[in-house]
Length: 154
Image 1 (cartoon, rainbow, N blue to C red):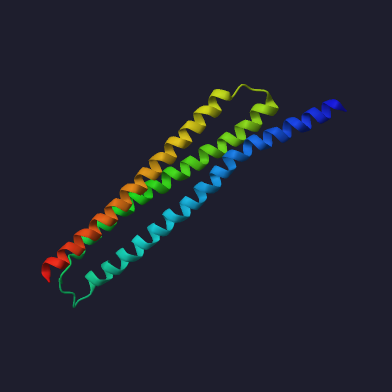
Image 2 (spheres, rainbow, N blue to C red):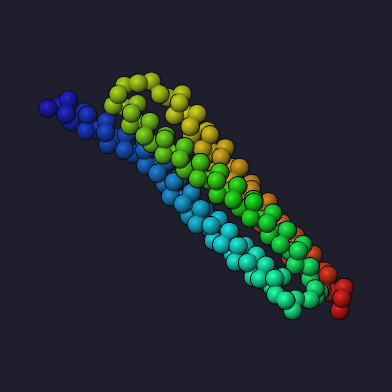
């Protein structure tokens, strides 16, 4: 009876340990939602500009749509990189959780593997946040340029 109780305590402790990475996956999911929303807005804006460029009565006005489309393409590349990196981070965290259970029940020594997977996840997460930061900086820089150009033309 005491062996069953000890195993139940071990499983309960293992679940507690595994919950921490699960909360991290939840945070990654929220961040992924933000990234995909930004990508959707970039794509929608690019499609609007492309359709404007394709109109037969299009005349180049105060803004260069080709330049703006180039900036949007650059932003989309950074957001795509961030989405890829953050998804890889979530996959590494999922592997950490699985390996925690395999380590406990199969009695394999996977501590180093688990630590490496967690480190890779955090590096991937940091790289995703860096790509996101670059995309936001591009967006705000081009916004400032547009404001400055408009004020010069006034």
